[in-house]
Image 1: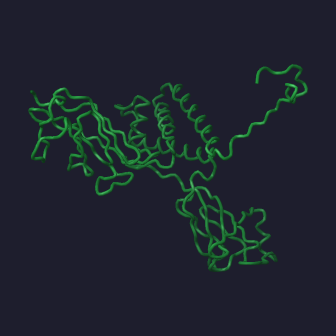
Image 2: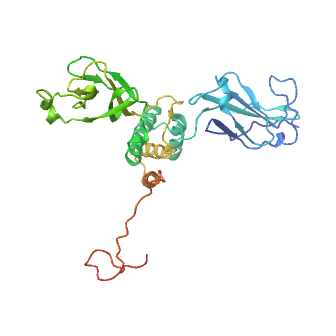
Image 3: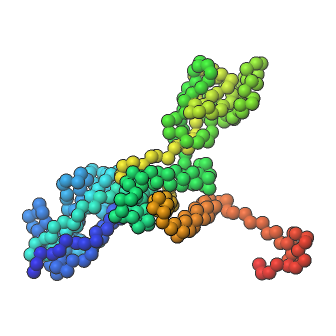
Length: 349
């Protein structure tokens, strides 16, 4: 029998620490499994060999299935690969007369549930815009479109789910004698959620914001204090700094709760994280931006984007089953609505 053909249509699907590989059946590989895998001294135990590399150079056999799919626990790569690591896969067929060459290497990024890689998003957006083999939109333009769409989704999720959707590890600092009392915000600050001052090891007091119009109230005769000296302590944001007034005493611990800024995606292995599977929004929106440059019809994609917006909003309203949506029945017991101008009852409830 002839040497089997190279397996075609190899598909890679990453997710939740695993990578699922599938390919088309090869006729000459279905009747025997006596091919000798490269680097082995005996025949393969399966019709196909799945090979993986974490450096793009050295490939190792990770499985020899008799069917046309394989699920790889990718976290075992490179001694325990983590999210964002690029892995490459090849598949070859074994037969009575030998083994085929390996399929072209396909890179993929190891992802957990709810994550997507920049490379995966870009390819999906190119497919949606029918621009996979087009150079009309450059790679950097695609990256810019995706980052803009990702930031738009980031803001949207904060708005519809609430400020607590993204919360960074609290940032703390100690006050000193500087005047004015301006301190730098964390470098990844995006939106401030709250400011607290430590009363003791296990207790914090929430500070309130003061407005610019009240700035002079803190200059003369209004610095009385009580426990821990925080009766009148307030804050406001000035550019990328936070100002505390009146001037706090030194050595007091301030804790900031904040939303971090969305990461800027540049490398193919960069991961869109924390978007809970809403990467479809980024795909559709970036495809719209590319097609607008091409001056193509975006009617269908705009309808898809609108449907996604509705789904995101609906999912947000049902996120906390402990606080269900409340609906008030505005119809009276007589079957009429509260609007007295209504002379006829409305139909079926």
